[in-house]
Length: 298
Length: 203
Image (cartoon, rainbow over all chains, first blue to last red; front, side):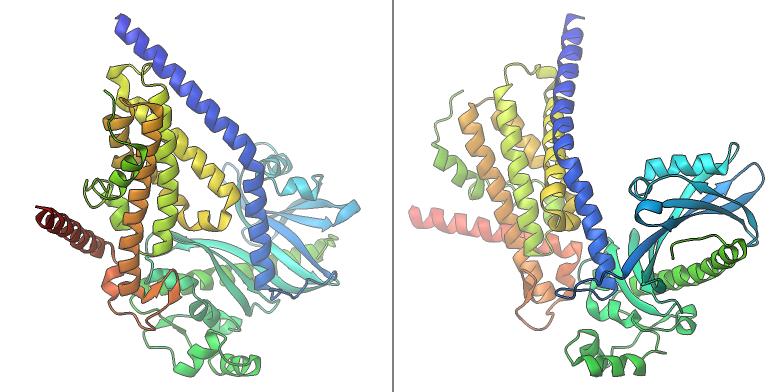
């Protein structure tokens, strides 16, 4: 009995010591970690829009975050959007509740700052308040509308879908006509040398410049990439030639990676679904915003 | 139970005569699963090195306070603590490298080599000796991972450290996990052969 008590005490003390060490490290590193994640996300976004390396971002460009929530009540479901009303001093958000048929249920102002809106916890609470009691809110996704002196130039969409092994996390940029501007693979666990090639330029760049009509039905073909197109995808030829070859192959399906057809298919299907669903949703949201004359920032 | 080896001997011992992967055949799971490139090997090697050294020293300091019946839980707890610390520090300081190997770092908790070294060495020997032994074992693991990674990366993707050296991919097979077993097996045979050869030439 004495033995067991000493064991209990010693184990408890060791656990507490371990917890203290971990806790202290966490306090020292959590800010840096959050900062890194945010910085990386920002960088990926800017790179997708073409501001790479020395190209600086002009001041006229601004980004507006839209958050989409699924609101479920007792027997009804609707989509709640959190749309920004402006930047800087007059910031704030509108809560727009739209039913599944695209009809407005209600809208109201939500007073949270831009800074706070990035914090998922604060945002969730504000959304739950706006939706009213008896409704459950679940965060669905986040879209960023990019404007250049007031007019929209692109949408940045995040998404996650099943790959060959686990989920593939992507971010993609489409222009206002839903033509593909760029694709970036953020996270994946495909096999190195096979499925992991999805993060290579020659695969990702195949999506660039594909119009919405092509994206809607995009699929993969099991054929080798023609040599000239491969050079263009790897940016080994001049800018002009790249554009020429891109438009030449714009109606072409995606060339599957050797030995990784499933991963290639997962990405092309995932991108197809993200763009298709987004195009549908944003049209509904735009209609509602226009009808209600809600002054949003984009 | 004093140790009669010098600190230098302890380090060399971990790298050569008691190399965790090739001689002790411990921690084969990461050796097979992760060693597809040299860089993966280096990164995981560094992480294991830190965890091994810190855990060995910690256990060695507290060796008289650990109740013999709960040795193993205490070891696991110590390793888990240091792994979490390394994990957090890496995520904060080296975000790019962490993005690639984050998931493997957490797996270090289950590496047999670390627990085994704590049980066989650190819980009996002095803090200083434990430090050198941990360093040797960590380096030995790193060397093993790098060697396997080099062979697999060169033969599988025709590259070294991400740079294309061959210009073509000789055998895609070497990238797959099963090829890890072949490479480890061949390396073990090679190490054993060297030992035999060395012994024979000596006497």
